[in-house]
Amino acid sequence: MTEIGDSKGEYRGIVYRNDSELKQWLGKRPPEAALDSLLPIIDPHHHLWDTPQRGSYFLPDLLADIGGGHNIVATVFLECQSMYRRHGPAEMAPVGEVEFVNGIAAMSASGNYGPCRVAEGIIGYADLRLGARVRDVLEAEIAAGGGRFRGIRQGVAWDADPSVGKFASRSVPGHLVRDDRFREGFAQLAKLGLSFESWQYHPQLVDAIDPVLGSRHHHRIEARRLGLAYHMWHVEFIRNQRPNRKARRTFGPHPRTWKSARTKLARTWRM
Image 1 (cartoon, helix red, strand yellow):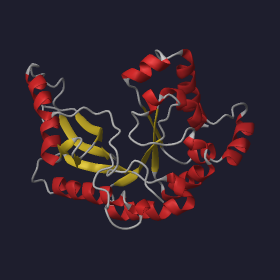
Image 2 (tube, rainbow, N blue to C red):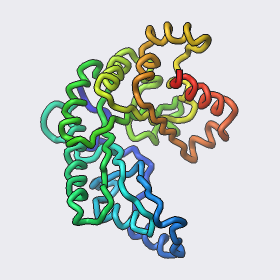
Image 3 (cartoon, helix red, strand yellow):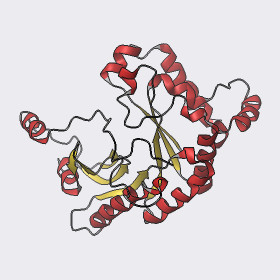
Image 4 (cartoon, rainbow, N blue to C red):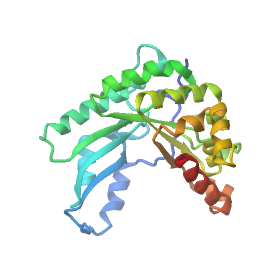
């Protein structure tokens, strides 16, 4: 299967990276002391990469960023299409990212770079549109992660307005989570004890809920038929909403419907 939006294709992200300008801007800001330098903190979301579009960001760069006086004891790496395998089946390409990050984590675990355990948790990528076949990818990532692999993130950010949708790092069809193959792949996460992180614009929250509400009994019956919601009872779900300036201009400020969708999402997965 062709990997959509892989690391060798068009760069679609919205991250601005010009290190010299960023460092100059940061140099104008006065240093801020940590409010509680003893409080243990886990950084839950960072990346590691080396691409022509984004520059390089490796272990020394991360350590410099977290070394401002806070007690960062561990970090969690989030997939960013970094160091995909060049050879082999396309669906296995993301395993290379887990291999790469686990190597960085092993360097950090040596203690030679300080007490923080960098990438102690790894969130990778696997295309759930593979259906049940995605299990092979997930098992390969578990093996490559050396005990650190915790789950996947799959971006489903989409909007009919191309001026908004173009900012998603992967190009995907609308309402992807409603696709039967996607849900078949999603079911594999529960079987392997892995988490799922969703990445979307806020009008897409309804896709994560499923268009089935009502009594708990009715919801469970319908959820089994629909697939995704039923398997959500067993999968840790992380919602990663994607704002940007163009999206805010298009959608307007977060309306009551957005707040309502958030509330329904939280209640749905607690059932």
